[in-house]
Length: 242
Length: 262
Image (spheres, rainbow over the protein chains, first blue to last red):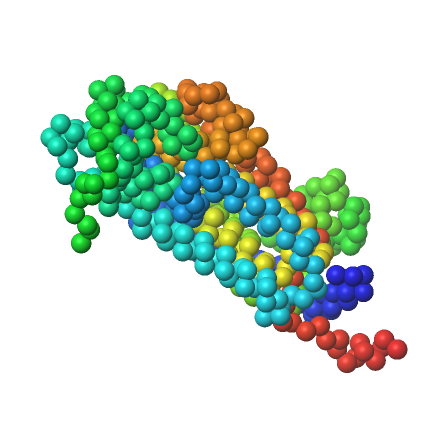
């Protein structure tokens, strides 16, 4: 926007403004009505949906499924879609940081004087696309199950480890056969071919972020989990989902 | 009926003699309230500012989309009020946090209702922020001369998301505990700043007793203070620059004015 366009805008704006109505009471009335609607919806949601309180936080637990608040689902999904471990920081921090920077700097790189959405094809398309992508990612995040069961046939001595693994919530981020989510963590279906037992234990205790550490898990459960993981060679995939 | 008389100039000193003596009881009561307003105004000159704020003109064509910003502000105020009531019962220690939340939810009169309002109010606030932001974006309202206000708005969005993140831990149930561990770990993967940020949030290398009180202090003192200050700046600039007219509104000078303009 050059000086002439700026002056033109200010001139047009002062004309429109002079033809308008005073803030009080016209805008105040609309705003107040909207405030009533907002208050009513918050109260309605509170009454209908309540404030659930789960079981007490327990660092030694094996049954948890970390889930963020719904409006963080799109970030959560981004983490799952961008799989390779090297790129995890890019997805977790890089993408949101770049997005926020692009937002903050928006008025500095979009300097055209045009304001009508239909005459700003790039901005309007980008805006609509962003809304769709965020909506779709939120939908994916919301519909992603958080299963606590692993549907795989294993020899009896690994049953315990299978249950521990399922209840520890590994499937929230890892895929085992047909179970669980494909990312952000690597697939575990054939993890035994990639990591020896000692390395599995080490990873459980000192994982790469964002995976939480399982150091506080009772030793017996941890070893059962490692036993189970160390026999996953990819050949036993369980029945396909129906 | 006596009309409310605002001083024509900010700080203008009223001399009592000009006004007629009230005779009825209602008139006397009105006179007392006017003199109280005058008393404050004589010392603060607030009436000029109030007049500037309340009687500024809103451009032609302003529609319901323009209420989204004030609706967000209202959701924030609801969060602030419900938050104060929750803080009356909440104890931010690792031992008592869960128990105090349980007590608040199950035992305190209307406790679950107020906690539900705070919990769902955050969702409503985030939705309203995104709607408000979409309105500003598609109407091109972030352009000259309102660029700086857009930047402040984006910072307000980030701070609101940080409010949500720090508040999520406070009930200290399984869900909040584990989601926060993953969230802090994600922060830790950031280059350079990451590890420091995670250590700062946890209050050390491990998730420990200080983490909860730290999140609590950030959630109810640090970020709300920043939010309040920036909302003030945001609103001041809205009043200063005026709200935009919808982009399709044409500025037409009325014929009488056009003639005058030579």
